[in-house]
Image (cartoon, rainbow, N blue to C red):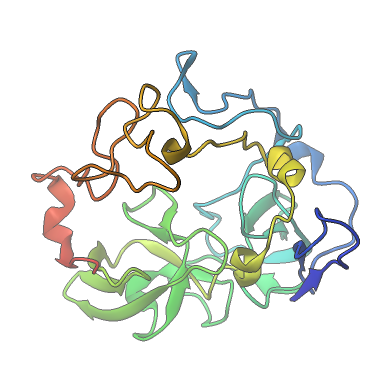
Length: 275
């Protein structure tokens, strides 16, 4: 893994950088059978904008990633490591012994030619997937199921992982990156190892055009608007918010507002809240 920083030839190139993963395959095209077209919604729900500053961007095709990996007991061989335009992590094309192909999340250190397996109890090696109750305590795991058979939901982005702190009765204690400690059934499956491309967060976009390629439109700060346009607007020079707490243009509380339901059914599974 290396970060390439461009020469300062012009204003757009100044400090611009990209991540160049070492194990990335030189394959030009993705697996055609695992591609689907996807309609652009760009932050809209029912045609109305629900998330501002989204739209445009380069045309992309969605890769069907197998988060369940439920081909139990069948060996798979890594054919290629590829980038996915829809996610920060790298993905790996797996060819199973019965000839079936699928994309899975690549773990750190995974390379072409490696063999992986998913089973109730599998060899303790990075990339293998098994039930949490059979994984040694103190292991870093990723792509963790929250509900048995639903597929991985926790620790799926680049460089993310969860610490298996202990197993008591039928429940496992997992420590999230945020510091939250949560109980999850030991029957659920998880992948051993950290998700690949951990240096993804170090990338500097460099210029506005590159942000547009990703699908982000220009953003105007509320503090530089007029009072009629935003609660933060107006004032001489660089004014602060000027209110008790930050608000959206529609008067709703913007920061620090708790959005989680007080009587959420999953509260009983949280041992310790994040800081």
